[in-house]
Length: 151
Image (tube, rainbow, N blue to C red; front, side):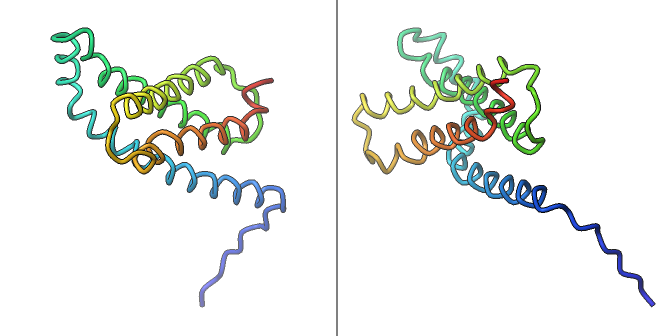
């Protein structure tokens, strides 16, 4: 004879919060999938980026800047997701969260400017998943965590 363990029913607000957090997490994964893959490949090539920046200071810094700013941006997105899942509470290090998010937005805009100025093939088809979707998702995350960030 087995005994079934029944979890206590969560209140409707908690269930709604968990449902919202789950949907936003799926949105974040979808919007940051391609930039995450690009940063994983960039982590393999980061020593080459560093040597290229030393060899050619005028144009060799761009891949290294994209990599460093992009990694900082991913830390910021992680902090925003942490704030979202934990509910509205004051963030003691909001300056760190906002500065890492600014670094990530800077990386995205720098990459967009590189694509736009260099007349890269693909146009919007390339820019959409790498530039615009992460920026839109970041703006959505900042909006959802505004009570924690701006108290």
